[in-house]
Image (cartoon, rainbow over the protein chains, first blue to last red):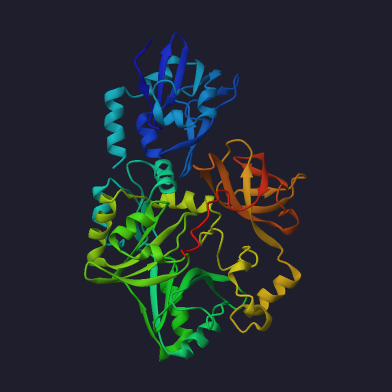
Length: 126
Length: 367
């Protein structure tokens, strides 16, 4: 599996072959607070880089989830729809959001590595 | 304008509060445990809420003060016992609500608790109505601390002996730590609890004492989920200048004896609306599934004509599901009416339901 990459919209992405797994970062969940609702893209639909690909809602507010790369949605994680609290518990593991068959692997080049993201998250949350 | 801080601001910081600006004050929205944990802790144990941003208006005067206030509020204040509290509203001539409030008859006058965002304007309105005959003091030297939840009586009574004798919606002065505290048995969570008016310089020590006894600080986030589960209105959401108490389904708060003769501001409109019915009324709404419908969500009937709008909506931690309140055309206000909510461009099913979403009996008093 490839190195984990991160977007400025606080999504993480890993790649196995041309299949990407995408979720939201721990930092994002900490900013959102308790997550109580999740909506995922439809299987078989095509999503565009930086386009909306879901929604999460905390007790406080709703936030869009964006996809850091373009592709076709192959699978979605129904368990986080049924129990959204899982997203707070294991955001960068079991609580992934969706899997994509990616269209253009060069889109990953624009994303941050862990170190860059941690620095970005720290700077933007102050 | 510089943001205002309550006397507990440092204590909030020490407890890892996340702050928001609310009505010009820097207030804690949550602490490190988060809204759901804080909500549940209040329902099971005892939560401490800093509500010092709210207005504490003391008005002093003789018997004529009661007469003057009856011209303003839809209450039977002449027959209100000293130390008893009533929920009421300050209205305009069209019965539009400037603010909702709690008024308590105290020795030599009244104490009125006002919403933070409305308190200065309320003071002006009341001052213009009452004139200089009465002493009015919107007291900025006192903090207001709410203690809510089933263990609150035991915890508070161990610090202020005698508060366990208070009946629901009544209050009294107590002495503690060489100062006078005004304590009412009331609240905004659907739980048994108290609100304590205490001088600013003593507030932090008092709250630290409550924490030592096992109560925990709770932020405005959980205050909102708790009040919504309890079906209670929040000014600026369910209530505003374009809504009347009848539309807001708050007729119960108007003293029956005042409905026959009126004589309070807005009485004509209220009496008319009681006779003819209001066009729209406040209702409870439960979306099906887990969908959350926030404020301003449009409400439709089954043939997709708009029939109203959501005024508050969130996830109710004790209900374990989404809950909302809003206004709908009267003919759609019956419990179990099926409605549609438009969220992010799609329509989702929901039902009108009875309020409150969460019910626990308030302590009626002790015998």
